[in-house]
Length: 380
Image 1 (cartoon, helix red, strand yellow):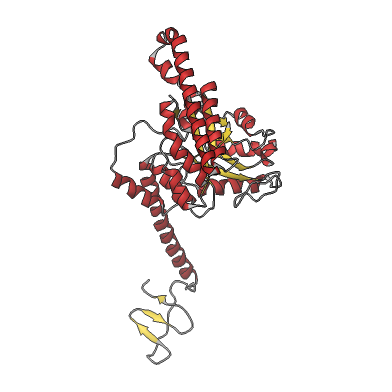
Image 2 (cartoon, rainbow, N blue to C red):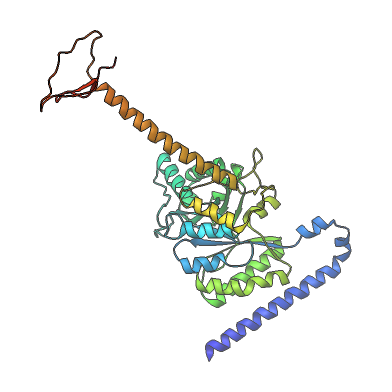
């Protein structure tokens, strides 16, 4: 009975807050209505608050992972490398038009195990780069990077510089999860010219229905106050239940759910020298669902990264097959050369004695097979 009363009070409190926000928005519209009329349609459209929502820790739980991928709206999914369902969930999210990023495991001050592929402050440059490249190669359709845990490593300016150099080389974006106030990751990303943002609100730091609803309200207030907010959640059942119920409210409150790449472009954070990997081509041909299913089936045979167009997938597969066939031919030719090198050198004009047929010697045409040497061609 007590739990039912608490749940009822929580629902009433959310309704009162929504009513207050609606009245506040209406009052602002009345006060600033004359000023809004002088703005262009583009400015008015861009002035609406936006929320970027990221779901971390994708890869271990298939059921909750698929449930998260099926959430409505432009949600970004941070996938843990080398996990049982990382590639399957990344491909499913990409197929539904969602953004996929690498959730890079990093060491933390609490000494908890982040999981496989962890980046540590004790790694040298070569080991660090190789571990990061392996993690990026494990996640298909990766467009950006954010940190998993990392309250220790994100304070290491040297290794954050190593990280950002690889991120910049691949033209990816970076999101600082800010698991510590001492993080230098976002600052290092900006100094390297990398499109980046930082987390504003954790939705499920406390995993209770009341706490996650309160965190979502905080995210909404932050977006209305500052124009934009970045929220990070995890595929916990309590978080997914809250998002399934509350995400439709954003449209009613005039808030748009926007992906990380679209928000970065809206903020003017793009690579200046070349288009970023996360920017989709404008001239993509219209394809049937059967075509894209075929392309995804081709991808399951090879681990692909940094693919932005379907033709690149098909061409890359063809090139790989040609290289395999060419290697086989080169191997056969090499073995033939080795066999020829085993033959004894016979001076020109050498005369061979007449051989008799018996069980030790055999004459076949113009070639003589001896029991102690390979075939000798006597055709000249």
